[in-house]
Amino acid sequence: MTSPMTIERTAATNASLFGAVSLGYAVVQSRRLDDWQRFLCEGIGLHLARADAAIRAFRMDAHARRIIVRHGAAEDVAALGFELRDQPALETVLARLSAHGIVTTRVHGEEAELRGVKSFVRLEGPKRLSLELFVDPLTADEPLDMLTSGFVTGAGGLGHIAITSRIPERSQRFWEEIFDARLSDRVSQRLGGVMLDVAFLRMNERHHSVAVAATRGLRLDPIRTKVQHVNLVAAHLEDVSAAYQRVRRLGFEIAHEIGQHPNDREISFYAVSPSGFEVELGCDALRVDEATWRPAHHDAISIWGHKPEDTSTLHTLKVNLGNALRGVCSLATAEYSPIRGES
Image 1 (spheres, rainbow, N blue to C red):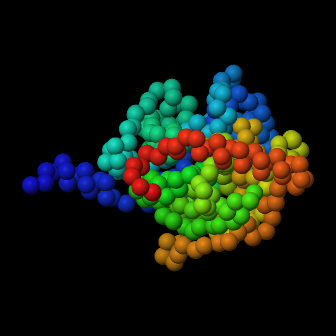
Image 2 (cartoon, helix red, strand yellow):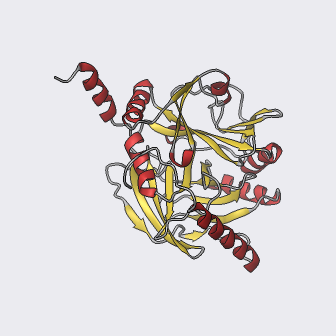
Image 3 (spheres, rainbow, N blue to C red):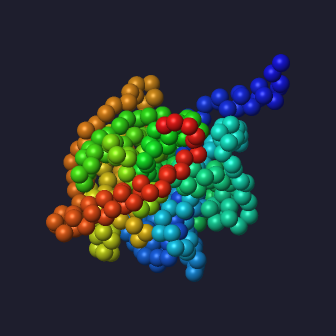
């Protein structure tokens, strides 16, 4: 006879989480705190919420924290916080993680307060990226002081992330099996001499919260950082164009000039952050209508624009050579996945 506890655990595991999960915050580890403050406040246009010798914290809406940069050597995204709609949704995730044998740790106190939450649950995600699950974000009453008029958050959360993977099928399974992510569409394009395939996964009304990219054929990882880019969505096109001009004037590299994507229709640009991964700022990203949406395949990442700002032969050679060397070196170690088994 099946015990009541087993029935309750099975029901929790099978409950749908779609629409109950969104990207809440990003924690970056960097020695370049002053540069990050210039980049995010004077360039992208966020609100500075805290600044001291060890921390820079930023707001973009009522949440007390959206991006936290703390002093450290990694020059990378150190953690991503995912907001769950309520405690039952969190319990559902925890049941699924337990079923996969994924260890979790509850965190309270100063670490949680730093992230602008009452508490969170930490686990090791794909590529050993720290994922932090929370329910109760702290809010701030202080009026926002931003160069950008506003950001689109709400049910869609902070924005999205893109990661590269040598085991993309297993990475995609993680987001689908743990968070009920749905495939929005796929994009394929040849970049730097290799064919890149990207799967776009949504967890809510936003077209995608996670994008997983992989090289076709021989699986290489040409990206040094765990996250290739973090996306933020501004309220208006004028916000994007003004931020683009500010970022350029401040001397930060523009990885891709303003352009438009074919799948989510977002108009955006990509800037190289002080830590080396990219930050995308866009606007007018579509919301998916679940009643009519069907996954599609696109043969280009952009309809127009998104060209590298520096198209010189020397710069192109430097970028391609660096990517090739990192890709070959990535073969020396296995990529971690919390999901076991075959891809």
